[in-house]
Length: 246
Image (tube, rainbow, N blue to C red; front, top):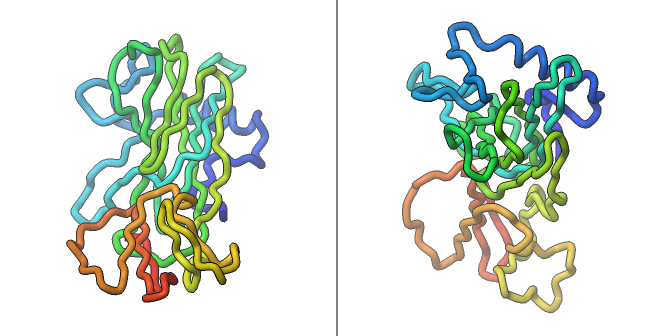
């Protein structure tokens, strides 16, 4: 996997002090003209949450959930004690832009969990296979917020951090399918060809996102696009001859 310089708001190589300073500065300087944040740190009612992308024209890229959430950090600023959420995720290419964290619930949650969606502006056309790109997004919380846990969702998974401040992360993906062309595809519950080396086999259970498989005798039901779906075209002997992200 490759880290894109376009998205590196916070990375593992940045010190904790630098991350806190960056997040605190972000928290103290809301966008001009934006609504004030509520006293409990919840998203403002009756409008889009602070930091959410605005629709400024028909040509602007559409926002979609990112492909996969890989980690959550909640940092507590030593200067003022505010909590800052930093979410980490993966997208299929460097053509994704402007990752943000968007609250998907309002008010004080019954279970104390702040539920968020990690999304970004998606490419406007299908893309080839390649290494995943890492993205990060920051969301500061207000003083005295009521949350005891944070959950971040993506198109393919969800991750919950149950202690604030703290860190949660998932295991690395087994296969990003960046080099799938020419390999044998094995559906869930299926068996690989007897003569196929393990390095030449792609197993569906290792692909933790939506996959559309087109076999030689299959039709194509529709052109409906899903920016987080991987389409694989198979040969008669079950090898992947073409692939692309919608």
